[in-house]
Length: 497
Image (cartoon, rainbow, N blue to C red; front, side):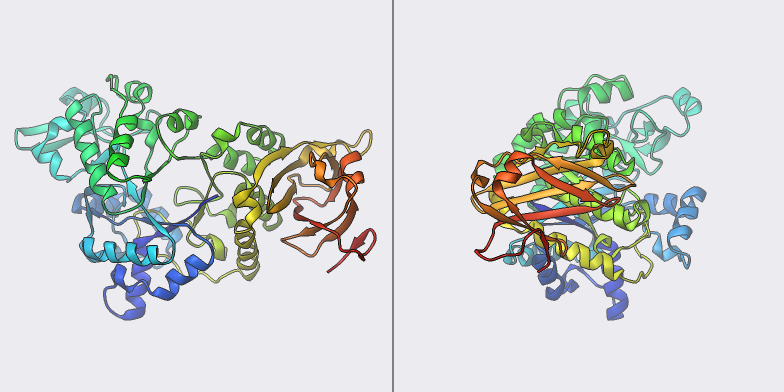
């Protein structure tokens, strides 16, 4: 159950620059912070936005009226210097000079490795920046258009100066929205483009241990042809195999939507965004969550679970506090990779546009920080690393009581012990029984100790095997029980530590 922490590199270094009264680089991310990340149990650090961007992207970011409104909403004291352009409008896979360049990144990676952490970076396969060197020197690598296309769909095409004269090229986009005006669309129907991007991926792999692949599903042949009317060979299987041939164990994480998670897993991705679970938690759809968690483990182990990231609103603004805790327990104790976002552990509420390199100062919410510290401690328990996960089916506590339908429950069981996770994902109190398929309970006495709270109950194993585990939880209530052998002398019924 690896954990990944997303860090906005430019924002972090801007804060360090202000503290140091000089420009900070990756070398100025102190050992104390790295020690803190490692102590929290993060296996991976994702540095968002380390690659070079260009003047064209910054100009578009600063001049776009709609974007500026979003900037001011996030950063009321906005300055032009705060607008650095989208970190996904890349002019080349070279570490930005202001971050300290490649040498500083290599040193940062070594410092992470010394603490048992691995480094993840961005790979943006669908498009480049407008002023990427290829736009001028190799325009044949891009989707081209005509003057008629430029008139018909000015949001999707742009005129670019190239070595062959002016050319109309397409902006990067997905099939459902207008083009991203600071990008150019790569043409995966062209073998030369596929080779060029395999080479770029290999260069990135020399600098890190894994990549998060932006909008990875856009390169699937059926999606690319639906978007552009251009037939394309599969890119990912060969590109992933090529990278791993040079870097064994290199990890691939796909940002993906539209129920294409399994397709991308089959093409070689280790993990794929689990937007479906997120959406069902946001919608309060407990039955949908249960159905989603009933999928096979081979699928679930390859999902990246999250409650927020740079593309989603802050969890603290989406979920009321009790509901936030319930959603976090389901999300981060299910199988798969756990993606947590810079500021999430402190209860940050501002969603920062990726074009900005400064964030507002926010006060840490002590309750949020305490909860996540305890949840991350649970994630380090051996039951999760050595045990097997299985969903548990809630059923009615008594005839006519349908409140069981709000429950989601599952267990981790193995040589290190058993964890039982139960959440009432409904806005009202609920009761249910949950069957525990644990034969070793027979004839024993056990204590159910909540690892996230003070609850502690003694139960007889035969009772748990017979009628099941009875749960009575308030709206959005949750338990994460460690199932422990009861001491010879213990309390009867309910007790506290």
